[in-house]
Amino acid sequence: MTRLSSVLAHRILVSLALTSGLALSGCIEDMTAEEAEADPAAFFGDEQWWDEGPPAGEESADELDAFDDLRAETEISAAPAFQLPFPCGQVWAGQTRTNHSPVNSVDFNRTDDVNDPVVAAAAGKVSRVANEGNTSYGRWIEIDHGSGYRTRYAHLNSQVVSVGQSVSQGQKIGTVGSTGGSSGPHLHYEQRLNGTAQKPVFNGSTALFFGTKNYTSKNKCSGGGGGSGVTGTVSTSGLPLTVRSSPSTGATAVGSVANGSKVTITCQKNGSSVTGTFGTTTLWDFIGTGYVSDAYINTGSDGQVAPTCN
Image (cartoon, rainbow, N blue to C red; front, side, top):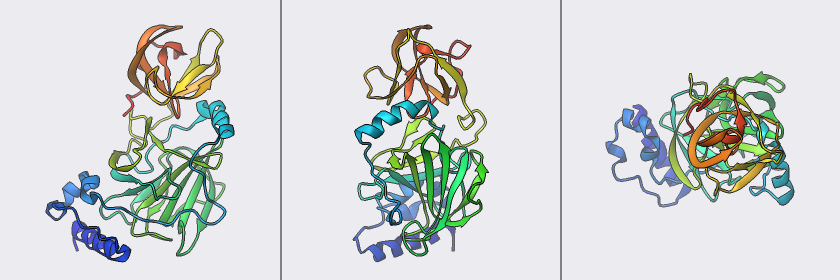
């Protein structure tokens, strides 16, 4: 069976199993295997995937309460530079949906993805390697990245790391599967802060909520934002520097970093013009889960020093 026909057969079985009445998109059958691999979101179309959520006792709230929001502000500078959990250059369809558990998680899929490698989204230490059998996550892995940040990878076909093992960003930790409660092969992925699921960020950009779109991995790509980033120092008049959800002075404040703090710039993007300690600039720095104006960051160099954010 060809790569494309095997996936079509799987989709038909899923539709029958879910009895949802979903039909295949009109021109899906006309796509070549190469086209489906290059544009998995178009291939899967409006199909709603399905899987079971975390095992009992591992549930996550999806909204930060006031206390967690304040705590997140103090830790935002330490947020890892998360990348897609797949090797550099691979294109995956990522789906978010309102009935997902937790809702702030992403399911990744592409054609013929069983046993495709899953890699660490950021460096850390393996904190969980578990198997829930035919329910929930099935085979899954959790990585502790420090400062309250953890990632989870579920429905794996295989696990190639052990608890306590240190892993580097981009290191293989397992393979894509359909174990546990799952409608078919895919990777269920979560980013958590202090046990609460966050909207995942990849290469400086927050995942689409809600819907299906293509994501291209920059994980460990040369010069693609998959490395350790550029270190900068916050320099203000003494006040904390506001971290915003996008590169704009009008964007939502998502935290702050103290004057004198060290931050890691994983990528940069042009936005609102800001006049600060180091002059006037439209350049903004992504430091983990938000943006700060480069006008207040000392990197020892003028202009852009990190890859452009997607």
